[in-house]
Image (cartoon, rainbow over all chains, first blue to last red; front, side):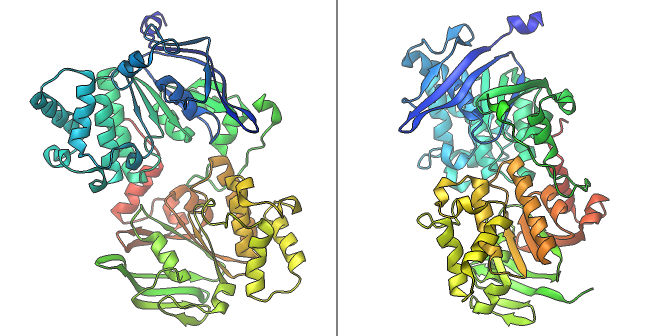
Length: 282
Length: 250
């Protein structure tokens, strides 16, 4: 435990994100607390549970009109709520990277892939163009793109979804961040491609000793990928448990989520459904 | 085996140069639930759309309930027999019509009587109740919208329901509710299902037999039991099976 303490990357205490609307304030995140070392943390929940907004608040991508408050939001000794926009930009992309769901929307459609990765690198480091190109090609190789020279000069629409997501991972890892936030990184991909991309992500995160926050709606996937899982419901963490102990989940919501998935070989008709209790959302 | 209610023989669908369906044949018996799995671009949705007359097919035959159909032309009778539920409940309901209007339209087209009772009964059957009757689709959640889409399909009392990824846009817990609803409707009405999904778990739960598709061809047709006991021959089926078991660290 002490080594994990000294290695602590991120401390989140009582994080709240709310959106004022015409019909009142919507509280998307209502008091989330956790700490992260150099480990893989999964955040699971259904749509509207606040899991993505938690990731976005850490990255500093919450819309301007939203209100963020927290007792602590500390990344490697810096208070993320206090720092200036300029300092924010230095951290974002350099020390914290983020991979989003669909590469079709997160890559620039009118810029070749290689140039986009070089742009990221040159924003944060002073390197010559030839060195930047060499590092980009190495990075593309690291995400198991077989012909990096060719992919370097392609536009995003010319590559498949799985390839696009590898490019995205390459772009996020080229500056060597200490923390990577992956928000549903494989949900837009085909099942057979998902495993490849997860394998690549897993290997790179382990090799580079990064911290990872893996946001997903898929409880089984998260538990097979992460060391620890936070289960969110209605803006709060209802349960936190080590992935290995998933079957021992205490909260009825977690148990319900695990039970309602149809699996091959389990003959359950009808499927058990979630009986949502009001007190879960309190 | 009982007579097949839906029979597709050597169907070909091409978009310009691209052959989306390459001589595909399937047979679905009356009362059966038949699944189609495959990754995106494998032609599974195109097959359903070609059956429903939303895409034309250029070669092959399609027989439904003893009737032959070709190209895109479908008789009014066809739509009394075959109805379809789509993937995205946000895109498949008219945004400016109330639920009442949405359900009334098919009834009016096909000249049904007792529309009032039919609409009430349809809403009851999908577990929505009359409180939802005069709402707009934007006032409903994704799961509720999919229930309305299912009510709209069932209100014409069809024999065959084509389901194109009916739950992949929904949360896992809502998915379970919709799957249960579909199973109940099938049991009550003796429906025939043709269900497309990328999720082997969902297909093996819902269907007795399934076809595995890849690049416009049917790779293999197996029973759900064979899937359980891993009694299949195609490599691609094995790949899908491994993928559905989730991530494993090597």
